[in-house]
Image (cartoon, rainbow, N blue to C red; front, side, top):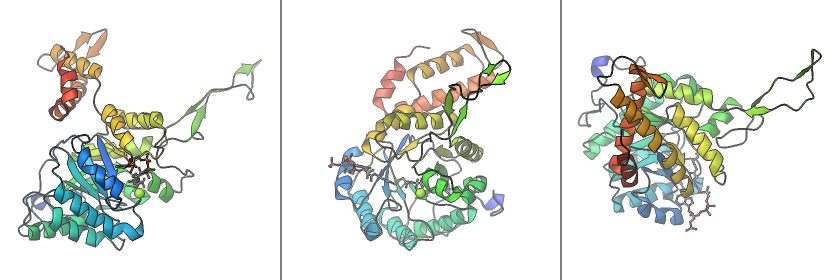
Length: 359
Ligand SMILES: CC(C)(COP(=O)(O)OP(=O)(O)OC[C@H]1O[C@@H](n2cnc3c(N)ncnc32)[C@H](O)[C@@H]1OP(=O)(O)O)[C@@H](O)C(=O)NCCC(=O)NCCSC(=O)C[C@](C)(O)C(=O)O
Ligand SMILES: [Mg+2]
């Protein structure tokens, strides 16, 4: 719990009259977190029609919003939130960095105006638990003043080397912590990585097959296969562990090569397999990719249900299709089945696909 509040106070409100913190973060589907610029009239106009087609709509106030448009973006988000009924779609925002000239006004404007509609506030460039503590207290004061009856949750972007080193304490810094996303572009810059991309791989980051040997001499000039490696494996895996340890949710972040829908799907799937629950969508065409990747396949759900059925009371070991199944493989299958149930509850097409399966 990061050396801050004692255990007995951890779930107490941080301001008199603020809503009681949640003891568990609800598992709401959030396969795609779709970013829009509320100061861009064309994008803003599309938002009401996107409700119901995406799990999360996020009004972005930080990077990618021109400095001259910061106030317009904030006001645009207030207007959109007030006039839109979001139903099962969540509304999130990404506020400006805490050391910027805009972050304070972002929070003091948004919470009184649309705090009842905002599910999650994403905080960029989080360095340590102190950043979350600051936002935590400020949100509590603003919620109390606005008379809100449920706490707004907080999501941190992992995009500095120090934030990465402190990821465990960040995840456990407040009961408001909902999840963490990878911010590959800022993180690469802060780490002084030699890439110039927003997420994804790099052809130079590879391993090469050993050279063939001729008469005991290695022929290094021979053609040898190379295999591109995942630049983000360590970071995502560590983020997943930190989130799982604290009962919150990990997300892959943005994939900047909008045209390369194939590599985007690969990157999202790597994150899905490692334990992430969603990714960001920067362009409408990335929503379908995230929805596909972060929904278990019908085949995986069918297999998981067969294992659950075969395992009876959940103990012991059985053989299924030549493979051993036991308590631990059952637990993996239950993760799959539970996710399928959550998604079926909000996605009629998936519901139909999953219901068509017989165990
Ligand atoms: C990439 C851009 C410039 C291409 O925008 P475009 O207009 O050139 O694209 P288009 O293909 O021509 O767009 C087609 C239509 O879709 C609309 N459209 C396009 N995008 C959206 C959208 N997101 N939501 C809703 N509508 C959208 C667009 O307005 C247009 O409408 P039209 O048919 O009426 O003319 C544009 O899609 C965009 O600005 N996307 C959001 C970018 C963003 O939010 N970036 C910040 C997150 S990544 C990040 O911050 C890094 C991180 C984590 O911090 C770190 O790693 O460090
Ligand atoms: Mg960034």
